Length: 286
Image 1 (cartoon, rainbow, N blue to C red):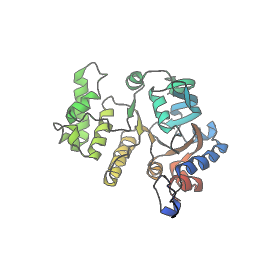
Image 2: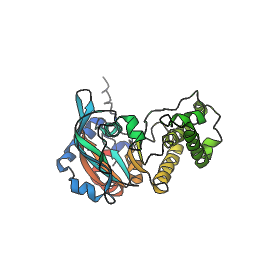
Image 3: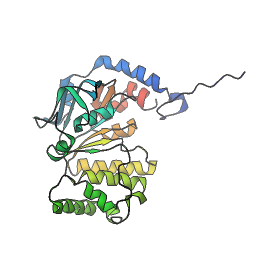
Image 4: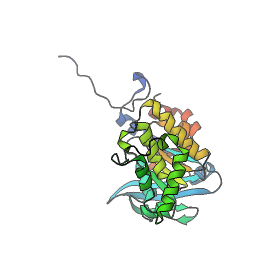
């Protein structure tokens, strides 16, 4: 009887020789948690005072706790990328910042103002934090222009919303050329651009970006990261990102965090984490 092949699921980055199972990634990554970064180390990575500061956050869904005493700090105009094994709590960090989770303890402050328990609408309107969803969130039967107007649903003055839409269309001619087309007819890269652009209507200064490369063909991924780089470096947006493509995310980000089991295991400059053997072995394919 022929020996059955063992089926292994992995991150799919690197050669066959370097792929390890998701279970092995989680097990080996958990060993990194023994050297949890200090708050002082996190602050050293920030340009000046943190724009967004999370301290000892315990959060989750319902009665389930996913984050266990998480600290995070990012400065104005910086980018931070969260990587880690599946189930580490990466998206839960973004959800917690934006008001989608149950906060059990800890704090989230923006420019020293407590925003921990603001609703998602209040986070967008008052704290100027926008969340770009992981999943395809465009309205396919609405035009590009109508999708953008939906980004200003909290504005009481529709004239302001239309002015904001025009500013976005002036910036992104690809969308301007398709403003009267249904969003369902856009390419994958154009839909992601529309999702990012819709988040800009309220003029946020912090963008929470969940898996910007997910579901995109390789030819569109670089374009999306170029758009995010422009928003950070030219417009001064602060970007907090979750990215399964760890290499791409760390190449982009000023700061990288590795999360394991809802806790911070490693932190450093994105370029430095790319050079760390443990990170390379577990998340970069060798």
